[in-house]
Length: 240
Image 1 (cartoon, helix red, strand yellow):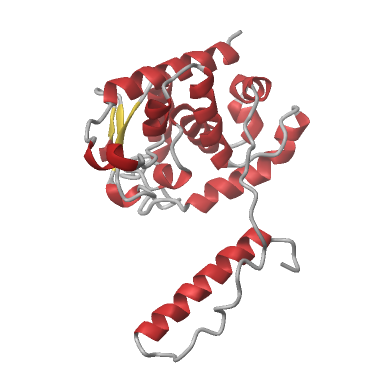
Image 2 (tube, rainbow, N blue to C red):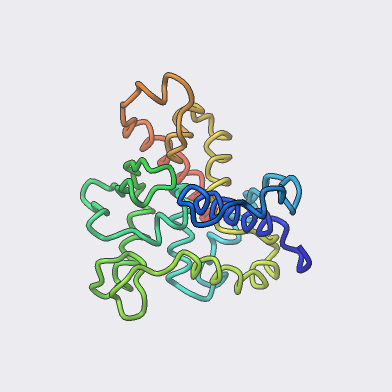
C-alpha cells in the first residue's frame, strides 16, 4: 500500500489468508493472524480500458515499430485477433496449432477456467503464428525461452509491453496492458453485433446456469465466423 499498489496488496492478503487456512487444516498453526486483514487495498474498480479504433489503427499500421520486438508484435497481434489470455499464448506448444485446420487448441491445463477450448484462427492470425514459428527456431514452444527448452514466462510479455509504452504514447496511444487487448476484442465483437453468448464463448468464459452445465456444443463454426468478422474489421483499420 505504501508504494501505491493497492491491487497487489489485496492479492497478497488473499494469499496469506489462504496460506494460514491451509496451516490450520493441517494443524501446523492454531490461528490465522491475518483473518481480519480484509482487502487492505479497498474495493477494486474493474478496468474499463479499451483501445479505440484510432489507437488500433496506429498499432496495426506498424506493430514492430510500436514495440521494437517482432516476437512481441506478433504475440500482441494474435492476442488482439483471438481475444485469448497472455498466459495461454505463452504456454502454447506448436502441437496445439493446426495450420491446415486453422485452429489453436488450448488444453485444460493452460486455461484459467480449467476447461480448454478450440480457437478458430483467421488467416491473419495464422500468418502471425507462422511468423512466430520461424522465430521459434525448432522449439516445441510457441514462445520459447532463449535456449528453446521451455516456455517463456507470461510476465516477459507484460514487461516487454511496459518498455514500449512510451513509443505508443508518442504515437497517440494511451497506456494499456495486454489484458486490455482481450477486452478490446470482446467489445469489438459486441460492436459488430456478434451474439453475446457467442462472444463469451470466443473468450472461453464460463457460461452461467443450465447452459454452462448441459450445453456441450463447441460452437466452433460460430466462433470462427465471429473472429473472421473481427479480423476483417481490424484489417480495414490497418489498410484504410
